[in-house]
Amino acid sequence: MNNGKKIGMALFVLGLLILIIYGFYQGFQNIKEIDLVIGLGSGVLLIGLVTLFASIIIEQRQGTQKMKEEISKEDLEP
Image (cartoon, rainbow, N blue to C red; front, side, top):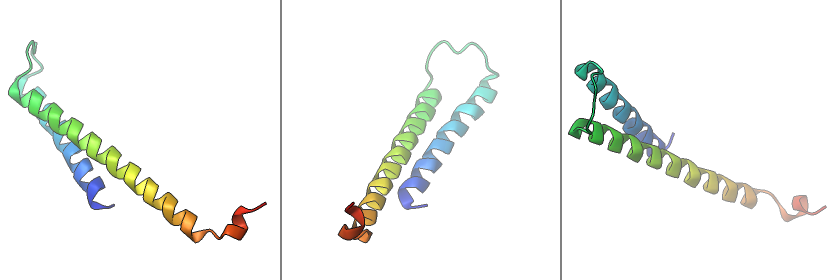
């Protein structure tokens, strides 16, 4: 795993943990308004997902470019 995936996964898991722990702390009462902790947890969760998806897309593009360089032109012709 490269650094982008590690950071994205860590932020995603951290966001989930914040939301789960806060839910247990509140006892799953009627949460009518968005608290600071819920906003923070959701923000970290979304940032983690975006980072994870971006790192996967970048890795896929690099893999495709590397594959194109390794395949000779003769193999690509019918």
